[in-house]
Image (cartoon, rainbow, N blue to C red):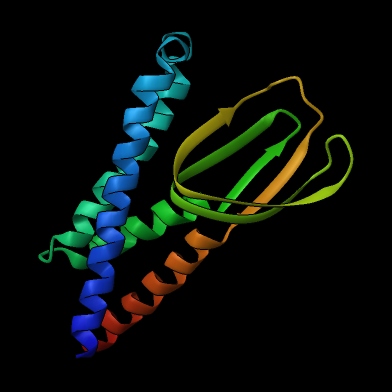
Length: 159
């Protein structure tokens, strides 16, 4: 029974990551075509992140290399755990659900709680003229990371 529940939850996480990545990929083409032409490096990184989400989900659904799927998903969710911008350099990557608590110092220090249902978005900034400092923790990614670590430990103990 325990394995059946674990497999169902892992299947749901895999399907979730595939759908979130595909939504993100479709949004890239729909909303950012001119931006893509102007910023090829940024596009390549963003495209790679959403593709990585899809690949992570597929590996979770494939049973022959299950631990690889968990490891890839740990990386994928780890990249979504924190969003930041520090003096013009930052990363905001979310593929799927988003519930976050963070702070920003622009224009003055304030806490922010934000949530989105199936938000797939990625913003990468390099050397932008900004004095902003923002840091956000994504609790959905944190919850998935905890579940994946738990299942990973179970798999190791089952061997």
